[in-house]
Length: 100
Image (tube, rainbow, N blue to C red; front, side):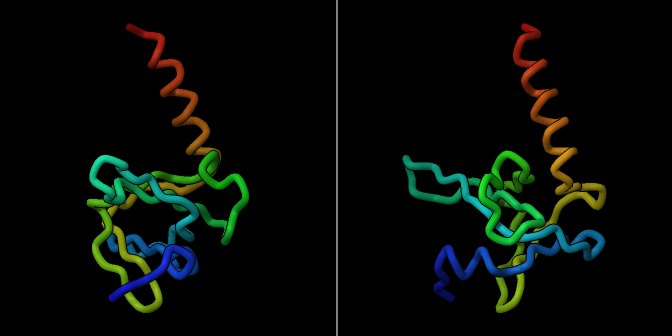
């Protein structure tokens, strides 16, 4: 199947561990050395403007299947795409960075 980035963004992202809908793909992380997708960013908003700030990062290896209507990922059942959770994780990383 050949699919464009805009078509991929319109598909629901579903977690196969528990069957929960996580949201939509809003951005991608690409390795420019080899030209492969490293991760997708998922948010509950379709076409969010500043979505990466509030999005959950899902490694590309966790993408199980890209189907006609949805993208299936396999993440731990307690995985959360809550923007508040993402902000807390980002703040934690900032604090950890200074603890050498």
